Image (cartoon, rainbow, N blue to C red; front, side):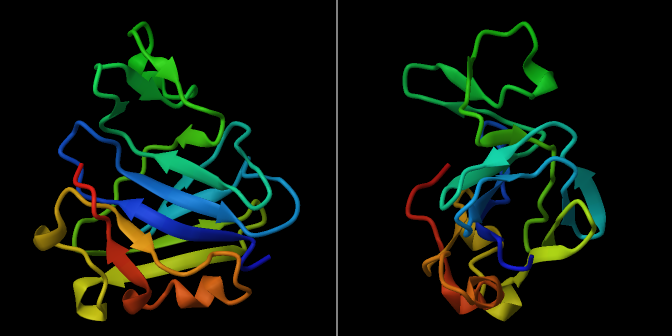
Length: 171
C-alpha cells in the first residue's frame, strides 16, 4: 500500500564512474520482494524481473545503466544481476542492490514506485523550481531525504523539496 516503500535518495548526475541510483526504504514490519514492481521515471517504466527483497525497516538500492561503485583500492562493486559486467573482475554487492537501468533526468523529473498490481506506492516530483537541490550547482551529489522515512506521512513529505538536501560527499 502507499507508503510501504519510500524514495529516500537519488543520484542523478553521474559522470559515468558512479551509478545513477535510487535508494528505497521499506517502512513496514515485513520484508517486501519488489519482483514485478516498476520504477517509472518520466513515464518510462522499468520492471523488476527478478527477486529483489527489501528487508523490513531497511534500505534497497536500484542502480542505473552506467557506472559502478568502487573503493579506493580500485575494486568494483556491482549488483549481482548487472549484465553489463559479465566476465569482469568485480565483487557482487549485497542482495539489497538491484540493477534496473533507470536514467534519472538532471534538473527535474518524476520518480514513481508501483507495486505488482500497478498501484503507486511512492512518488517524488523533483525540480530546482520546487526547492529540490538539483541542477548543475549540485552535479556529482546525491539528493537525500532529510526526514525519518518510517514516519507515517513520509510518502507525502518526500514530495516537498525543502525536505531534501544535497549530499555532502561528491561522486
